[in-house]
Length: 67
Image 1 (tube, one colour):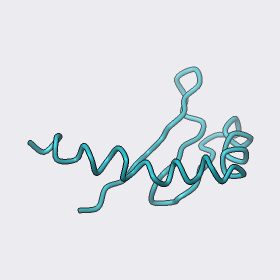
Image 2 (cartoon, one colour):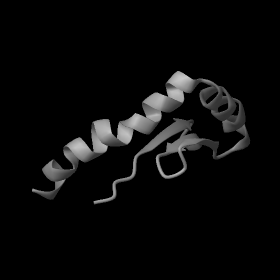
Image 3 (cartoon, helix red, strand yellow):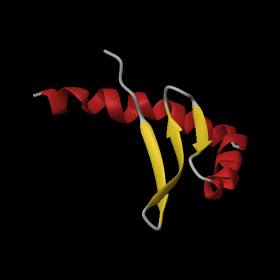
Image 4 (cartoon, one colour):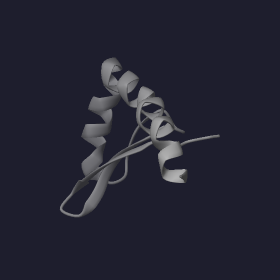
């Protein structure tokens, strides 16, 4: 079954950047998020870790939520 991972960052109650496993990279949600998204996307280790998170967190816990 398809599982989606979101890693969302907030400042002052407003989301400014997010990683979406369907997209595979960080995207700015607001102007404040542009520098963060650019930095995260420039780091191959950060991207690899975020892309692997869907298997590390989501699929591992998916059965727990359904039971």
